[in-house]
Picture (tube, helix red, strand yellow):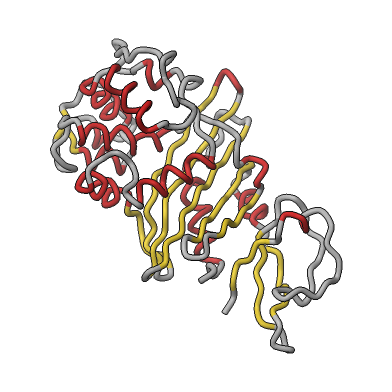
Length: 304
Protein backbone atom coordinates (compact mmCIF):
# COMPACT_ATOMS: atom_id res chain seq x y z
CA UNK A 1 0.00 0.00 0.00
CA UNK A 2 1.20 3.49 -0.77
CA UNK A 3 1.78 5.71 2.23
CA UNK A 4 2.57 9.30 3.02
CA UNK A 5 5.68 9.72 5.15
CA UNK A 6 7.42 12.73 6.61
CA UNK A 7 11.16 13.14 6.32
CA UNK A 8 12.57 13.84 9.81
CA UNK A 9 13.53 17.53 10.30
CA UNK A 10 17.27 16.83 10.41
CA UNK A 11 17.03 15.46 6.89
CA UNK A 12 15.31 18.46 5.35
CA UNK A 13 18.39 20.30 4.21
CA UNK A 14 20.88 17.51 3.64
CA UNK A 15 20.25 13.88 2.99
CA UNK A 16 22.39 11.43 1.07
CA UNK A 17 22.10 7.78 0.16
CA UNK A 18 21.46 6.06 3.46
CA UNK A 19 20.10 2.80 4.75
CA UNK A 20 17.76 3.35 7.69
CA UNK A 21 15.15 0.98 9.00
CA UNK A 22 12.42 2.95 7.21
CA UNK A 23 14.23 3.98 4.05
CA UNK A 24 16.26 2.14 1.41
CA UNK A 25 17.30 5.45 -0.13
CA UNK A 26 16.63 9.12 0.56
CA UNK A 27 17.16 11.90 -1.93
CA UNK A 28 17.68 15.63 -1.40
CA UNK A 29 14.48 17.56 -0.73
CA UNK A 30 13.73 21.21 -0.18
CA UNK A 31 12.11 22.89 2.81
CA UNK A 32 8.60 22.75 1.43
CA UNK A 33 8.52 19.26 -0.06
CA UNK A 34 8.71 17.31 3.19
CA UNK A 35 5.93 14.82 2.60
CA UNK A 36 6.96 11.74 0.66
CA UNK A 37 5.21 8.68 -0.69
CA UNK A 38 6.83 5.29 -0.20
CA UNK A 39 6.13 1.68 -1.14
CA UNK A 40 7.88 -1.62 -0.47
CA UNK A 41 10.95 -2.13 -2.63
CA UNK A 42 11.95 -5.34 -4.41
CA UNK A 43 14.15 -6.35 -1.43
CA UNK A 44 11.10 -6.04 0.88
CA UNK A 45 12.62 -2.90 2.42
CA UNK A 46 10.61 0.34 2.14
CA UNK A 47 12.06 2.67 -0.47
CA UNK A 48 11.37 6.21 -1.52
CA UNK A 49 8.91 6.30 -4.41
CA UNK A 50 8.61 10.03 -4.96
CA UNK A 51 8.28 13.32 -3.19
CA UNK A 52 4.70 14.40 -2.56
CA UNK A 53 4.87 17.69 -4.44
CA UNK A 54 2.19 19.76 -2.74
CA UNK A 55 3.82 22.84 -4.22
CA UNK A 56 2.39 21.76 -7.57
CA UNK A 57 -1.12 21.68 -6.08
CA UNK A 58 -0.76 25.12 -4.50
CA UNK A 59 0.74 26.50 -7.71
CA UNK A 60 -2.30 25.21 -9.59
CA UNK A 61 -4.32 27.76 -7.64
CA UNK A 62 -1.60 30.42 -7.78
CA UNK A 63 -1.26 30.52 -4.00
CA UNK A 64 1.30 30.20 -1.26
CA UNK A 65 0.24 28.11 1.71
CA UNK A 66 0.82 25.36 4.22
CA UNK A 67 -0.77 22.04 5.05
CA UNK A 68 -0.56 19.94 8.19
CA UNK A 69 -2.06 16.52 8.87
CA UNK A 70 -2.08 14.93 12.32
CA UNK A 71 -2.51 11.16 12.60
CA UNK A 72 -4.12 10.66 16.01
CA UNK A 73 -3.38 6.93 16.19
CA UNK A 74 0.32 7.38 15.48
CA UNK A 75 0.49 10.81 17.17
CA UNK A 76 2.42 11.93 14.11
CA UNK A 77 2.42 15.24 12.24
CA UNK A 78 2.90 15.57 8.47
CA UNK A 79 3.76 19.00 7.11
CA UNK A 80 3.99 20.97 3.90
CA UNK A 81 5.72 24.36 4.21
CA UNK A 82 6.03 24.25 7.99
CA UNK A 83 7.49 27.78 7.98
CA UNK A 84 3.91 29.11 8.05
CA UNK A 85 2.77 26.82 10.88
CA UNK A 86 3.10 29.51 13.56
CA UNK A 87 2.18 32.52 11.44
CA UNK A 88 -0.88 34.31 12.90
CA UNK A 89 -3.78 35.45 10.74
CA UNK A 90 -7.42 36.32 11.18
CA UNK A 91 -9.54 33.19 11.64
CA UNK A 92 -12.07 34.54 9.13
CA UNK A 93 -15.21 32.36 9.01
CA UNK A 94 -13.56 29.47 10.83
CA UNK A 95 -14.47 31.60 13.86
CA UNK A 96 -18.10 30.72 13.12
CA UNK A 97 -17.45 27.40 14.90
CA UNK A 98 -16.86 29.31 18.12
CA UNK A 99 -19.68 31.81 17.63
CA UNK A 100 -22.16 28.99 16.96
CA UNK A 101 -21.00 27.02 20.01
CA UNK A 102 -21.38 30.06 22.26
CA UNK A 103 -24.80 30.86 20.79
CA UNK A 104 -25.97 27.30 21.49
CA UNK A 105 -24.51 27.25 24.99
CA UNK A 106 -26.04 30.65 25.85
CA UNK A 107 -29.46 29.59 24.55
CA UNK A 108 -29.46 32.13 21.71
CA UNK A 109 -30.02 29.12 19.45
CA UNK A 110 -31.84 26.00 20.63
CA UNK A 111 -30.35 23.79 17.92
CA UNK A 112 -29.20 23.92 14.30
CA UNK A 113 -32.80 24.37 13.12
CA UNK A 114 -33.19 27.62 15.05
CA UNK A 115 -34.30 30.46 12.77
CA UNK A 116 -32.48 33.80 12.87
CA UNK A 117 -34.42 36.85 11.68
CA UNK A 118 -32.86 38.59 8.68
CA UNK A 119 -31.36 41.96 9.61
CA UNK A 120 -31.73 43.38 6.09
CA UNK A 121 -28.09 43.06 5.10
CA UNK A 122 -27.99 41.97 1.46
CA UNK A 123 -25.87 38.86 1.03
CA UNK A 124 -24.27 37.71 -2.22
CA UNK A 125 -26.13 34.46 -1.60
CA UNK A 126 -29.68 35.37 -2.55
CA UNK A 127 -31.09 32.45 -0.58
CA UNK A 128 -29.73 34.11 2.55
CA UNK A 129 -31.67 37.34 2.13
CA UNK A 130 -34.46 36.18 4.41
CA UNK A 131 -34.87 34.49 7.78
CA UNK A 132 -32.58 31.44 7.79
CA UNK A 133 -31.57 28.61 10.11
CA UNK A 134 -28.29 28.25 11.97
CA UNK A 135 -27.62 25.20 9.79
CA UNK A 136 -27.93 27.15 6.54
CA UNK A 137 -25.91 30.09 7.87
CA UNK A 138 -23.11 27.85 9.15
CA UNK A 139 -22.81 25.70 6.05
CA UNK A 140 -22.91 28.68 3.66
CA UNK A 141 -20.83 31.18 5.69
CA UNK A 142 -23.60 33.76 5.89
CA UNK A 143 -21.92 36.69 7.63
CA UNK A 144 -25.01 38.59 8.73
CA UNK A 145 -26.30 35.58 10.70
CA UNK A 146 -23.12 35.46 12.80
CA UNK A 147 -23.19 39.24 13.27
CA UNK A 148 -26.69 38.81 14.69
CA UNK A 149 -25.65 35.93 16.92
CA UNK A 150 -22.77 37.93 18.41
CA UNK A 151 -25.11 40.90 18.90
CA UNK A 152 -27.54 38.68 20.84
CA UNK A 153 -24.73 37.09 22.87
CA UNK A 154 -23.27 40.51 23.69
CA UNK A 155 -19.71 41.81 23.86
CA UNK A 156 -19.11 40.98 27.52
CA UNK A 157 -20.12 37.34 27.17
CA UNK A 158 -18.09 37.02 23.96
CA UNK A 159 -15.02 38.33 25.83
CA UNK A 160 -15.66 36.01 28.76
CA UNK A 161 -15.97 32.99 26.47
CA UNK A 162 -12.82 33.81 24.49
CA UNK A 163 -10.91 34.20 27.74
CA UNK A 164 -12.22 30.83 28.94
CA UNK A 165 -11.39 29.20 25.61
CA UNK A 166 -7.98 30.90 25.34
CA UNK A 167 -8.83 31.27 21.67
CA UNK A 168 -5.92 32.20 19.41
CA UNK A 169 -4.02 35.22 20.70
CA UNK A 170 -6.79 36.25 23.10
CA UNK A 171 -5.75 34.52 26.31
CA UNK A 172 -7.00 37.63 28.14
CA UNK A 173 -9.06 39.70 25.67
CA UNK A 174 -9.18 42.83 27.82
CA UNK A 175 -8.15 45.01 24.93
CA UNK A 176 -10.69 43.62 22.49
CA UNK A 177 -13.01 46.15 20.90
CA UNK A 178 -16.59 46.13 22.09
CA UNK A 179 -19.08 44.61 19.73
CA UNK A 180 -20.89 47.34 17.80
CA UNK A 181 -23.35 46.92 14.95
CA UNK A 182 -23.07 49.56 12.23
CA UNK A 183 -26.01 50.72 10.06
CA UNK A 184 -24.72 48.26 7.44
CA UNK A 185 -25.16 45.39 9.89
CA UNK A 186 -21.41 44.88 10.28
CA UNK A 187 -19.95 44.42 13.75
CA UNK A 188 -16.63 45.95 14.70
CA UNK A 189 -15.77 42.85 16.73
CA UNK A 190 -15.40 41.04 13.40
CA UNK A 191 -14.19 43.80 11.13
CA UNK A 192 -11.19 44.74 13.30
CA UNK A 193 -9.21 41.81 11.95
CA UNK A 194 -6.02 42.78 13.77
CA UNK A 195 -7.75 42.00 17.07
CA UNK A 196 -8.35 38.27 16.68
CA UNK A 197 -5.45 36.22 15.36
CA UNK A 198 -4.82 32.50 15.28
CA UNK A 199 -2.01 30.38 13.85
CA UNK A 200 -2.36 27.11 11.90
CA UNK A 201 -0.86 25.38 14.95
CA UNK A 202 -3.58 26.86 17.17
CA UNK A 203 -6.28 26.00 14.64
CA UNK A 204 -5.17 22.36 14.67
CA UNK A 205 -5.20 22.15 18.46
CA UNK A 206 -8.61 23.84 18.64
CA UNK A 207 -10.12 21.29 16.23
CA UNK A 208 -8.58 18.46 18.27
CA UNK A 209 -10.14 19.90 21.44
CA UNK A 210 -13.49 20.14 19.64
CA UNK A 211 -13.37 16.55 18.42
CA UNK A 212 -12.34 15.14 21.81
CA UNK A 213 -14.98 17.27 23.59
CA UNK A 214 -12.33 19.12 25.58
CA UNK A 215 -13.91 22.54 24.98
CA UNK A 216 -16.15 23.92 27.77
CA UNK A 217 -19.40 23.23 25.92
CA UNK A 218 -22.02 20.53 26.37
CA UNK A 219 -21.66 17.31 24.40
CA UNK A 220 -25.02 17.96 22.73
CA UNK A 221 -23.88 21.34 21.41
CA UNK A 222 -20.51 19.99 20.27
CA UNK A 223 -22.34 17.19 18.44
CA UNK A 224 -24.48 19.77 16.63
CA UNK A 225 -21.38 21.58 15.36
CA UNK A 226 -19.72 18.33 14.32
CA UNK A 227 -22.83 17.47 12.32
CA UNK A 228 -22.80 20.89 10.65
CA UNK A 229 -19.13 20.51 9.76
CA UNK A 230 -19.67 17.32 7.72
CA UNK A 231 -18.69 18.01 4.12
CA UNK A 232 -18.34 14.87 2.01
CA UNK A 233 -16.89 11.35 1.70
CA UNK A 234 -13.65 10.82 -0.22
CA UNK A 235 -12.27 7.32 -0.67
CA UNK A 236 -13.93 6.14 2.51
CA UNK A 237 -12.85 9.17 4.56
CA UNK A 238 -15.61 11.29 6.06
CA UNK A 239 -14.47 14.91 5.77
CA UNK A 240 -15.55 17.45 8.41
CA UNK A 241 -14.39 21.03 8.10
CA UNK A 242 -14.93 24.78 8.11
CA UNK A 243 -13.58 27.18 5.56
CA UNK A 244 -13.05 30.93 5.74
CA UNK A 245 -11.34 33.74 3.83
CA UNK A 246 -10.61 37.39 4.53
CA UNK A 247 -8.96 40.37 2.86
CA UNK A 248 -6.41 41.99 5.16
CA UNK A 249 -6.36 45.19 3.16
CA UNK A 250 -4.09 47.00 5.60
CA UNK A 251 -1.48 44.30 5.13
CA UNK A 252 -2.09 43.76 1.42
CA UNK A 253 -2.88 40.11 2.01
CA UNK A 254 -5.80 37.81 1.17
CA UNK A 255 -5.92 34.66 3.30
CA UNK A 256 -8.00 31.51 3.47
CA UNK A 257 -8.52 28.45 5.68
CA UNK A 258 -10.01 24.99 5.64
CA UNK A 259 -9.71 23.33 9.04
CA UNK A 260 -11.21 20.08 10.27
CA UNK A 261 -10.80 16.35 10.63
CA UNK A 262 -11.23 13.05 8.77
CA UNK A 263 -12.61 9.77 10.07
CA UNK A 264 -12.36 6.29 8.62
CA UNK A 265 -13.24 3.38 10.87
CA UNK A 266 -11.37 3.93 14.11
CA UNK A 267 -8.88 6.27 12.45
CA UNK A 268 -8.98 10.05 13.00
CA UNK A 269 -6.84 12.62 11.20
CA UNK A 270 -6.85 16.37 11.86
CA UNK A 271 -5.86 18.89 9.21
CA UNK A 272 -5.34 22.56 8.48
CA UNK A 273 -5.01 24.09 5.03
CA UNK A 274 -3.89 27.72 5.06
CA UNK A 275 -3.49 29.79 1.88
CA UNK A 276 -2.37 33.35 1.25
CA UNK A 277 -1.70 35.78 -1.59
CA UNK A 278 -0.90 39.47 -2.03
CA UNK A 279 -3.58 39.67 -4.73
CA UNK A 280 -6.61 41.08 -2.91
CA UNK A 281 -8.83 40.10 -5.83
CA UNK A 282 -7.51 36.60 -6.32
CA UNK A 283 -10.28 34.63 -8.06
CA UNK A 284 -9.41 31.16 -6.74
CA UNK A 285 -8.76 31.61 -3.03
CA UNK A 286 -12.29 30.69 -1.90
CA UNK A 287 -12.42 27.52 -3.99
CA UNK A 288 -8.88 26.54 -3.08
CA UNK A 289 -9.60 26.24 0.62
CA UNK A 290 -11.42 22.92 0.26
CA UNK A 291 -10.17 21.81 -3.14
CA UNK A 292 -6.53 21.59 -2.09
CA UNK A 293 -7.47 19.22 0.74
CA UNK A 294 -9.75 17.21 -1.52
CA UNK A 295 -6.97 16.85 -4.11
CA UNK A 296 -4.56 15.57 -1.47
CA UNK A 297 -7.09 12.99 -0.28
CA UNK A 298 -7.92 11.92 -3.82
CA UNK A 299 -4.27 11.61 -4.88
CA UNK A 300 -2.59 9.91 -1.94
CA UNK A 301 -3.14 7.19 0.62
CA UNK A 302 -2.88 8.41 4.19
CA UNK A 303 -0.70 6.58 6.75
CA UNK A 304 -2.58 3.92 8.74
